[in-house]
Image (cartoon, rainbow, N blue to C red; front, top):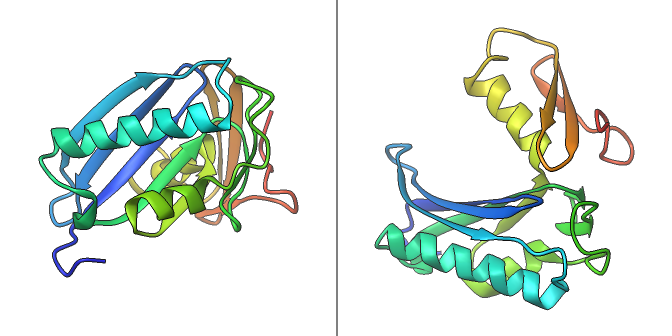
Length: 169
């Protein structure tokens, strides 16, 4: 990591689109964004190329480079093994995308740590810290998009369960 590193890259990987944003960690300001469609016919290689492309476009929009990043975070509409950074499956996309080591591929590409988690779990954490759940110790988030997802927050912490899917609908 560069001593100048001061940005984070976030990627929202949904059933119909990829959104990427670069955040200035000193100010919390989003300084660059990009969007690209996902495709149900993509295999793992095509999917990762789309993710790299949208990430590169967000970095370009922010007028910064990968060397300025501190890390990459990805929220995925699917089942993930967050501890190992593996995308287990994507019910709204290609069934060929199974056991994809997404965090490692992103780390290899951008040279910084990458983390992967279910998108609704990430949204629930955001609500717990900064949003509608900030004053509640326990709540359930349900999001309806291309699919339906859920996440549970108890005592201000995400409840994942033994398989990492607690709250999923």
